[in-house]
Image (cartoon, rainbow, N blue to C red; front, side, top):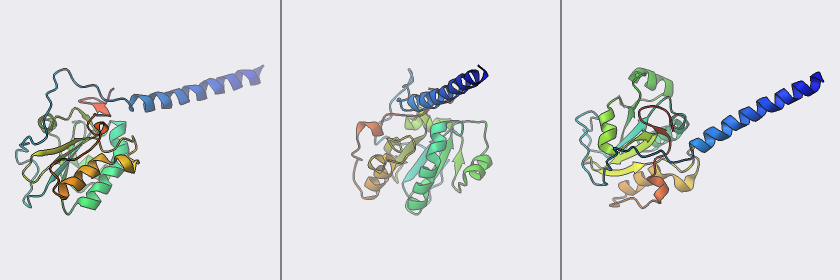
Length: 197
């Protein structure tokens, strides 16, 4: 009788763990709800960075909107760092952390980032960002070229939907607009300002 009880308890425990993993995977595969007071920012809109991201070389600017408490943001870090490594000489990169419980040094040290770390949530509003992680690419004159997802895959592993990288490539080849499918522009991840779905 004791063995049956232990076996049933273990089955229940493992079932609970599997359910939690399934629920989290399902939850973050759904688009982030659009806030009721959301105002879309159209492609081509001038984004005033108020001198927050120095760009003396007049390069395009890539802004990574990030929340260390958001699981999707944490999954995204290796992919973002690979973009910085690949395009860092052609594009100015910066991170906007949308969580005030951290310092710039904590983020730089924890994720080994040697780029500007900002905490100005007004940049997110001016770019139309309402979830993390999100990528924003501005042309050299700071006009919005792309705002959207890094990848269709939660772990940024699907090369066929590497949206942020595709946007970078089209901007650098002087194409006027990135041609991407609708999934590139739906926000997936954590709502601002908290990590919730």
